[in-house]
Image (tube, rainbow, N blue to C red; front, side, top):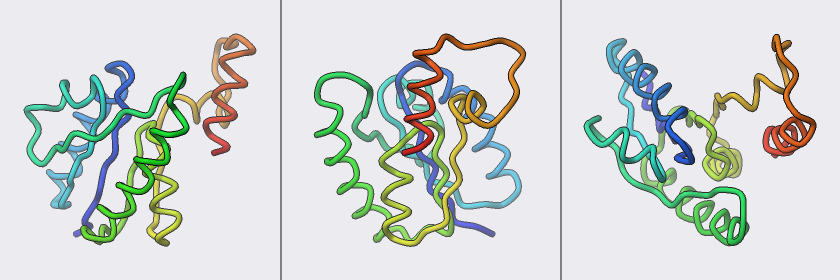
Length: 137
């Protein structure tokens, strides 16, 4: 089965709640899943085996430097781990680290829905712009 490195963004609980089900299902199907979570997600996922806490990268002051630090740390970690795939639930640096190392990656998150799906409601213009920028990165 696949060796999966699963990254979870921790600004709020939504990403972590979704991850609980996804990781349980992946493990039930025999995959080797390691989880890296930041912020609140690390707290929500504390009872899940193989969860390591990583630095939160969130909008606001210090985001660019936090992104650079995480990108370097994620590249180093992924080189050591050699996963078959990187899954990112809302976490940007991990996707870029996997891309730089040629590791297949899968991104999940609500931002993708706002950009690539027809949603029944209209998000405010600023939220759509921010998510387009996020997804584009």
